[in-house]
Image (cartoon, rainbow, N blue to C red; front, top):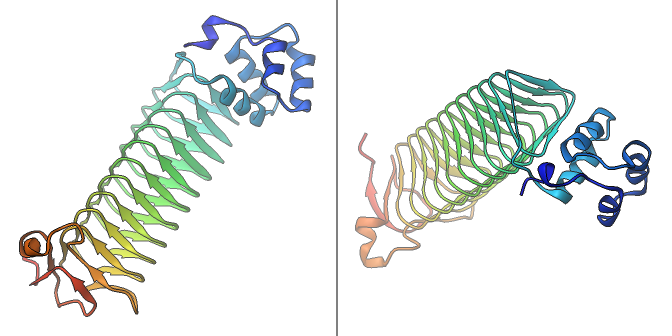
Length: 296
């Protein structure tokens, strides 16, 4: 339902949502006779009340409205519908949309980026805070997020993805070059990088993990299916895979931890579906079928 087209936001309607006292006083002073939903969001942002605008969007939800412009730049952006920008989108602080954010160029947010649905950029995405995307995140260049990055669908980036906090992708993640994450990495489905994968905590995928270079995890490395590295596969904790483990270099777990392949495969099928290949036999191999060096 498009709230902006169905009713104005009235005093009683706002009061029923139990706003903070200061915010409600501002509304009475400036919009006591009611206001169009998006016009009220714009007025709050213009008055520097960005948190109040976000609260209002949380209460009344997204609309079907579309803002289509050539470029978009502001101190903060809060829009209840979809942003469709042919060029770049830039905000000194927050970029938030109730539905999707689509840019033909790049997207830059100073403190945070929030989208209820998809985010797509013909360039790159840079956020100097946390980013939360309800649907898919697709960029033609790279992603640089200074804090946590949460994606409710799939993540697709042609270049590097760098995350300064946690990375959570409920779908699959496909990174064209390197993936570097300062916190834990979780993918609900598959995780693939054309370069290396480096996580400063546990790296976990519900399906498989594939990297063209090294895979390194500062804690555990886990996959529901198999794990394949074009270089070394190293974890400071345990390495666990439902199926096979393949690395052109070494496979090494942390001191006191084991390496487990074939956790979801019957023992009699290990020679076909739980093969462990590496430059040398891992010292801490606890399960799976050692198959020697991987073919180049």
